[in-house]
Length: 141
Figure (cartoon, rainbow, N blue to C red):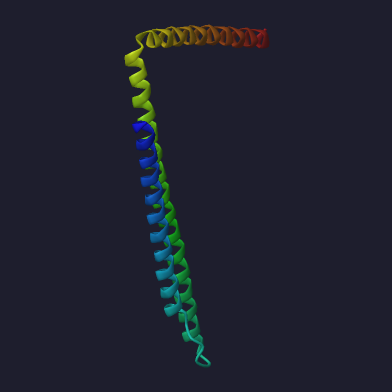
């Protein structure tokens, strides 16, 4: 029963962290939108060619900054997801290790299977090498 409660508490903590991350992302986007609104030129009247070029350059800079911010945000999100997956894998590894320690015969069975796989790999390697040698010999003569 306590394992179920612990599992649900971890799930709740995970959901709370996701909600906090989503709120933070929304706040950052709102701040960026407000900053973009402040940086956009207001149409006051006719502008000279130089002023128009500077305004275009400023808009291009804002767009580039927004793109870089989006990339950085994506990188942070990816890093968080990879960290979460790492925790899950480490948890699974510890559970498997616990099972191995409780039932030692499992590790001997897995060892035998691994030895058979290695033997089969060597047999296949020798067979493929022999086929290649025969093909080369047939191609030469």
